[in-house]
Each structure stands twice: as C-alpha cells, then as structure tokens.
Length: 154
Length: 305
Image 1 (cartoon, rainbow over the protein chains, first blue to last red):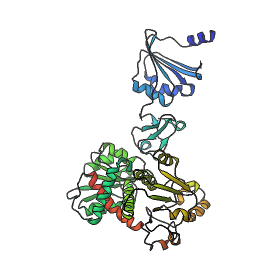
Image 2 (image 1 turned 90 degrees about the vertical axis):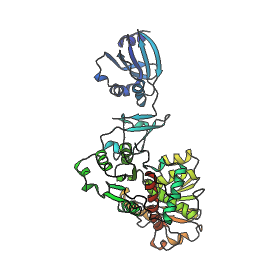
Image 3 (image 1 turned 135 degrees about the vertical axis):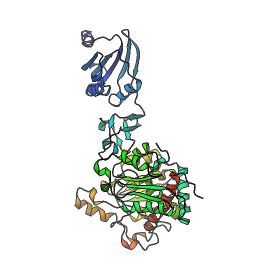
Image 4 (image 1 turned 120 degrees about the vertical axis):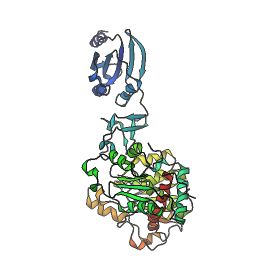
C-alpha cells in the first residue's frame, strides 16, 4: 500500500491531457523524441524507472492539455508495442487503449542498408510492416527486411 | 507517381507477365517496328553497364525512337553533388521515358514516385533488374513451350545474385520446383525460402552439384561466383571450381534441358558447353533485346499488333 502511494506521489496528477503508460525503460527517451516533447510549451511529467507490476521497471509520460493525433501515438508502437494511452478529462480517464502498429511507417525508422537510396538522398524513409507478431519491416525502396532488434530510429 | 513505370518484377501481375512474354515473341518475329517515331528516350546510367545499356538503346533504335543519356555518372552533374531527384526532374523535361541504372538500391522506385514520365529500372544495386527477369522468363517459355510445372536448378551465387531472386519471385505464379545448389557461404537467403514456404513452392537445397540433380532439371540457371564476395580467397578458389558445368555433365540430362546464364560468365560454364545445343545463354542475351522492346512499349502504353 505504501509503495503504491509513493509511486502515485512521484507523478503529478493530470487535469486534462494524455498519459502514455507502460513504456519499456530503455525506450522512454526515444518515445519522448518521437513525440517531439522538447518543442512543447505545455507541462510534461516524465517518469523513468518506475516500479511496474506488469514489466518490472517502466517509463511514463504525462502531457498536460495535449491530445496527440492517433497516427502520432501509433508511431510509439514501433519501439514500445505494449504502451497504453490514457486520455484524461477533469482528472478522469475517459479513454484507454493500446497503441497499434500502422501498416506503413514513414519518416521514423532508418534503413540499415548503407546502399539504400534513403541514406543518400534528402528524402523520407518508408517501411512496410510485413510481420506484426515478430515485428519485421521491409524497406519500400531497397526491399531489405529489418527485424525488431535491428530497428534504428532516424 | 507514374503508375506505368516498371521498377520491380513484383509490380507485374501474372497476366501482365504473360502478355509481355507474348509481345516479346512478336518482337522476335519482327524487331523493327516504327512505334517510337518522334519519341525521345533517356538512358541514364549512373553506374556503367555496357551490356544492358546497348540492349536498351538498340531496342529504342529498332523501334524508331531517339536516345539521349549518359553511360557514366562521372560525366554528369551528379558528380557535382546534384541529387537524383533534380537529375530526374531535369531529364523528364526532355524525354518521354527514362531508363535508369543506379548503384543505390531503391533509386528507381524513388524516381518513379515523382517523375512525370515513366521509369524503367535497368538495375538498382543488388536489388531489382526486371528486364533481365523478363528475358529469362521469355527464354524459359520459348525453350520449354510453357512456364508451368518446370524444375529449375539455380547454381552458384544464390546469396547476392539478384537475377535468381527476381526469377524465383516471378516464377511463383507457375508452380515450379526449385533446386538451390551453392556453397554454404552463398546459400539462398532465408527470406526467399520463407517466400517459397508461404506460397507452397517446392524447393531443395544442395551443396553438391550432382549428376542426379542435373538429370531432373528442365532449366539449369548458372550464375557467376564473384570473387569480390569472398573475404577468404582460398575459399573462393575452392568454391569456384565446385560449381562448374562441363559438357560431359549434360550427357544424361533431359532432352529439353537448357542452360541459362545472365552473363558475363567466367569459368562456371566450361567453353566446351558452348557448342552443345542445350547451351542457350547467348540466345538468352539476344532475347533481352526483344523483351526490352516489349517493356518499352508497355510502359508507354503503345499497343503492339
């Protein structure tokens, strides 16, 4: 009981906004970058290495008064497939859902093939998700596969 | 994006492949047809490839079109740092069609996304080379009478050889059986074997280039084992002779067997095979001209009768 209370205290409550929960610790700052949080003027609370009953240690991001487009949130699925989105209105969770991996991933993942055109021209990368369960992507341009542990963000 | 472009053999449906094979036959019967009169075709070879460029340029000339272009990027503004996009946009102001070869993989796909004129991919690095695949398919159809239910044995460099990868993908419409014959270092990559599994295509892997496999084969597709792929040159010396085809090895083969090779060959086909009627690689290269005439007409929407 005491432990739970302490955790709750560690992260400020949100009146309105978005909470992204259950982010693996090692992906937390990547998610922060992916959402462009450093450019926000709103108040943001970032929790790192918090105890989690689900995944040991976790990260959490609370952004006040911002409701990200679904497309933006789904990008998180590439690095944090089990992340959960909570939409808060007036201190109440009005919506809660998991992130879903999009079919096409544009401009986020880097192609690992140095001979790929995307690494040599000023252009966006484009990947197709070819295997959702094992998280395998395929470059739209050079057609090389990228597996989960090979994914590098731009 | 220009949807008429041909970037990858996978962009074509079975019907489109069969139609191209049929048109290729018409061009073999009569290669000189003035279908491109008044048209200008650009051949942009950012990476040199004399064989492919001459074949495409001959195709344009036999169709009565005119050719502009370059055969080496060193003489163009890309050596000054111009982006591919800018080069393509410039040339598309002048030409009705761009045929391009590039050392970077995905270059043609990218060009096809913004080019106002169609793009034909004449090779993008180790990725795709669809006109090679079309001439292979035509050669198979012509020599076997069909594309269906054939046993195709691929020999040599199956890891880096893009021609074998594209041929494998294209043949999936036609219920083939594949034999993959290579050293462990140059085995068919897993993704293509997964592709076969997913589409119920039967395949067998061998490290021995045995008589038994040759005797079951309809199409023997030889490839060059490239020296530059090996870190250990001793290993190269050992492997290159393991996958050499000699004339005597064809003695007990099926009467309809044909030997194909994308050329250039080094020593993987002994010279004594050349006079065997089962050797088909020089005619195969000639078929490239007709296949390219058919492809050019297809992407420009020109009907051949």
